Image (cartoon, rainbow, N blue to C red; front, side, top):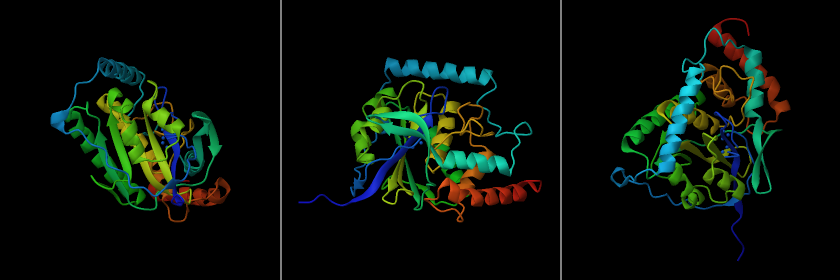
Length: 333
């Protein structure tokens, strides 16, 4: 009997925050969504929903997880002491114009940060095509068995609010659901993540060994990540998985939620020149900025089409950026 015809291309990339913050490997997981690595096409399969621990079943965290929590709190304190992890979204010290928006968009939306080599993911920027969601995004939060009830409530509120903001900016229909989700947001502590292999296979069957290993063996300096899977057309997303470390203190955890959910919509790369932006490895900003909102607005502008190359998109991107700056500032582009 012949196997079913392939219909999907899973993970496109893995993107995320590393070192101090935002590198990954954006999915090689998507920011594991900061870079992207092409995945094999998958047969049509129904993902079995993973069992989710109820609040009354919450388990005690391991000493390793507790130590990681101390490490990330110290890291957050160090970054704040340096004036980083800003929550103001930028100001008069971070001006940008239409040329900046154009350059940053082409670098972030039309380049990948990671490639697959053998069984591993390698940080190497490569040119890609424009990718985005076409169908509605159905988002589900999944917590590890060691994530405390109070943290679950806070993270649920934060994800709900940010998903609504993303929907408003992009025009996408983004809803939260407990069934048939296509964008899973995982909040896992160290022990939860290492044991998550079977659930990961169910949520994204056909995942490459390199991406799965990067997810399960996430190094300490990799703060969070996102994995994206493409449809058979290779340019529209079928599903995504964002990984948020449960050990992060609230500010850093919300920062990861902002970056990975935004990158999971198609802004898969980072750029050291992007400012004010979370799509930058310098950790200057903790939350999605107005500059970043405009990048997402541009990504979902109907004049751009999935599959466009840099050469195809550049003239339109420039025109859209000029229009946006003129409309939002009333000043020079």
